[in-house]
Every structure is written in structure tokens, then in C-alpha cells.
Amino acid sequence: MKIAIYPGTFDPITKGHLDIIERAVNLFDKVIVSVAINSEKGKTLFTIEERIKLIRLSINQFHSVMVDSFEGLMVDHAIRHSACASIRGLRALSDFEFEFKMALMNRSLNEDVSTVFLMPHAKYTHISSSMIREVASLGGDVSEYVPVQVNKALKKKYA
Image 1 (cartoon, rainbow, N blue to C red):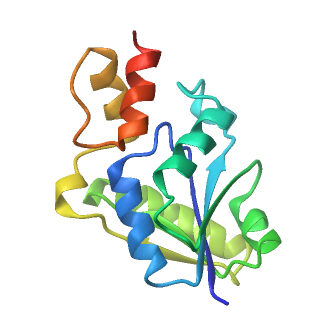
Image 2 (tube, helix red, strand yellow; image 1 turned 120 degrees about the vertical axis):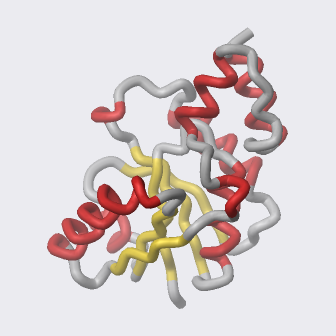
């Protein structure tokens, strides 16, 4: 069974993330969306529990996808799940340099876990979770870019 980890902060999950998940499901037998507990990124809008819940509500159409969280090295987390790959989304050329360096570091830590870069549909290449949070905080409509339940949660957070 080919298992892949899709790590990220997912604060919040977007339709771009879901597009990457859909692409990954077509390549792997099982995909584990793994929410990183990352103190370096600072305070998140949604708690780890809220992010996991929003992801679960957003992926119910994918039967081979599960959700969990992790702290520490992604490659260690991948090995605990017998994963052979880490999924990373690339929206633009500007993402590539950071992701390339991260992939090389992960390979040096454990060469049994490959990094697979996937590109979302063009209509999602300009969005990010941070942009979604900013627009939503200013009262903008982000419904085109996030699942319905995420849109409701954002409205509630910023009410």
C-alpha cells in the first residue's frame, strides 16, 4: 500500500488544499492530511482541534484520506505511518525555492520518504491560508476559495 503524508498548518484548509488532496488520492492508496503543530509559525486563528475538525468535514468525499496532527520532524511522522512520500503543493515559482530546500533537507534526514510536488488548478494558485484569513478579517467574501464549513467558521471567528 502506497501511503503519502500531506503536511501543513491548514489554518484554514482551502479549496486549493482540497485540489491537492484530490490529485494525491489519484496517486496513492492512502493520504494522511497531517496538521503540523508548529510554534515557529506563531499563533494560529484556529486551534489544532478546530483545524482537524474543519479538514474532516471538508474531505468526507475522499474515503482513502485520514486526518491527524504531528509535532516534530515530518519525516519521523511519515515513517510512523509507513508513508513513502510527502505531498507538497506548489502554487507559484516563488514557492519552489523554499519547498526545494525543504525537500532536500527531508531527503537528507530520511531518503526513504520522497517529496512529491503537485500543482493545484490555476484558479487556486493565487490563494493561501494567510490571504484567506486577511480577506476574511476585513469582511471580504472568501466563499469561492474555502469549503462552506470553513467559510462559516471564519465568519464566526471574525464576527
